[in-house]
Length: 242
Length: 218
Image (cartoon, rainbow over all chains, first blue to last red; front, side):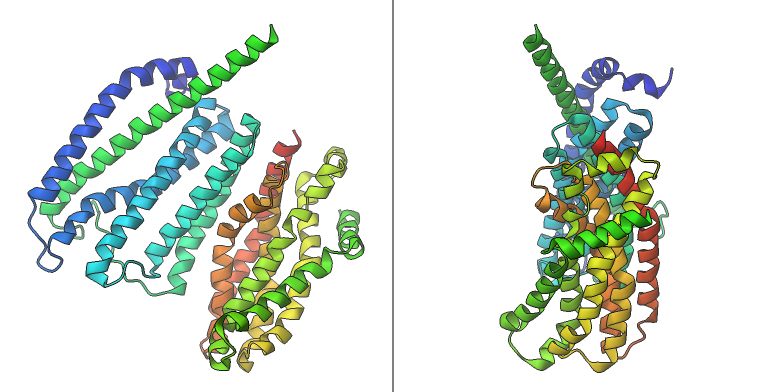
């Protein structure tokens, strides 16, 4: 028994088919509880008023936007080293979700920024880093669509993901040199001294769990679609050969 | 490897349209800025470092697809790939040749163009220094993008989309170096950081480019 067993597409399909409904229901439940709790049963902040509640959308999406890229890096590495097709397809499936999360984080931040900072957009290092991350996602997805041969596309996108990760990290620290920050520090931390107040922290954790579950369900769904697409085109090739 | 390096430089000089093109583009970009923002010398002095760096960067981008595209189409790359020369040497030599024919002339042209933009006199040394050690990063990172998109028909736009995000750290440190010099701060730290980045690109990008090239030649 090892996790690599599920690199077999047939095994992956049967397992993900069973897990997917459970995960979907769970993510819906977590999101419902987390958002209702966060929006209606938390106090207003003494300085920010009710605008603080956008944290329940902003922080989970920002958290995922970064972690989806890391997940793509890991699956790209697995594809590159062990040549498991499911892994490459999972990276391909995750990219549009990642770019959506980046956009959600940017938009919710802008909506919050207008009343709080007096502007929708500032060239702050964190904001700029997200804009950069957005461009990296765009390039990655464009490369997938530009190459016809599927294995070549998987290889080149995974190389791009690896090289891009290095440069995305460099950019993230380079922008600190370039402009002063406006954005507050980390909202999340394992250390209870530094994270936001418990009244916000607990529903926030529920929301993050909901977002993560939503992401996992979407990735499984999209990977299953990709596998089915491949099977379909394989059947078509076989059909035209005879 | 040296023969390949010389051949690429010769081709760039003799084929026409490749060598002077980047320089002309750089000149035109710089010339367009006063048309766009007005001929106010005080304003131009403030934005000159950024304009010069962005202009050099875009001029460098223009000729990237020439690194591999023509050799890929006429089969030269296949011959090179079957030669005893390792792929990393091929990509390294070609990126170096690209720098000699693009980055180096851009560096030399930057100082007179800086004068047109009313760049403060303290900044000239750092402008040339930052472009001299920064443009190799542009050529080597660009060669990686060119290697990835070599199999794509009409891949020029895709190449820009892939390469430009990778240029961000170099641009930030490079333009910061010149801006700091122009405003009387110490530019050495950002210059050192950009040069480190450049050395990293020269060392690592031929490996990544060779990897991508091998996939494309499969």
